[in-house]
Structure formats: C-alpha cells, structure tokens
Image (tube, rainbow, N blue to C red; front, top):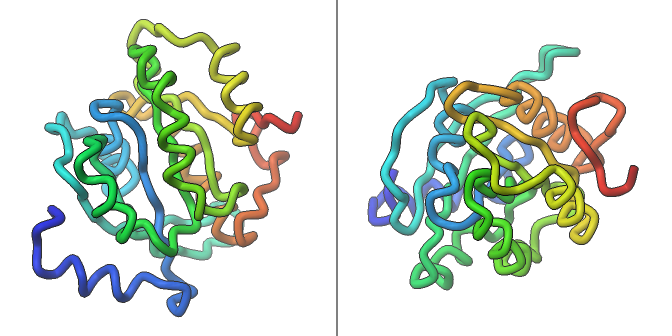
Length: 199
C-alpha cells in the first residue's frame, strides 16, 4: 500500500496504543538496503525483487509464538530512505513499539548513515529496537566487528539475515514475538544467534 492511498489514514488510526493486540513495526534504513524485501519475508515468507519504496509502504502479518502458539497481528511500516519524505514519515511512525534498523552488508555507506535513523526513531522504546544486517548472501563490505561496535554504541542487539535466501528470518520473527510478548523486554537467552551489546 503506497502512502498516497486514501485508506492509509484509516489504517493508521486503528494502530495505536488503544489497540493492544496490534503492534506497529517500523522498518527504517537508507534507500536500497532491502527493507521492502524484508517486509515481504515477514508478511508472506516470499522474496520480492522490489523497487525502492517512495515515501511509505504498509502491510500486515501475523506472527506466532512457537512456544505457546499465541498469535500477534503486526502492521509493518516500511519507510522509504529519501530525505524529502522524513517529516511526512514522522507522522506515521508515532506509536511504534518495535523497529528494525536495517543496513546493507554489501554497502558500507548504509552503516555510516545509521545515526540519522537512530535519531529518527528516538520515540521507539530502546528495547524494541534491533539492528538488522541484511543481504548476508552477498560479499560483505561491513565486518561483524563493525556491526558489533555500532550495536554497542546504540545499545541494540543485532542479527545478520538474508531476505533473498531466508537466512535467520525465523530468528528475527522470534525476536519480534518476544519483544511484543514482554512489552519490549526481550530475553536474550531465547536466541543464541542474536548478539547483544550488553553481553
């Protein structure tokens, strides 16, 4: 759903703190890091070769807790990386409880630009944020140590994934579910792949 759709305002109005069974999830990061493909993986478990999002794309999915079978409705807000839409995007990001700060492992500049996005999501609870290093199927320009340094600086766990191959997408979904269930109090012992800056 593109930001120009008339139904956007209606959808956003229903995703608020007054809707405890619905979680608003942001995907942020520089243009071209693979946020839309990542959202596609979360929504319908498929990989989509997508064009760059212009402004905003909204979709919904349900995630299930593998332990107790409980299900959670998630509305994903995929924010385009273009600066000119930033003030417009701020309005749609209000009330978000979970945020995937996404970088492109094959493009070092996406790591350099991350501070801008950290400032943008200042309203999102810190324990509801995770650094997602996408495109692990490609030759990396960013090392694990560099990711760990950024993770420590901004006090976020991090995870390498591939929207294309599906690598670690299940693990990311588990993190999202635990963040929702515990009101963003994520228990790190539920995942050995996630690396926390607090370790």
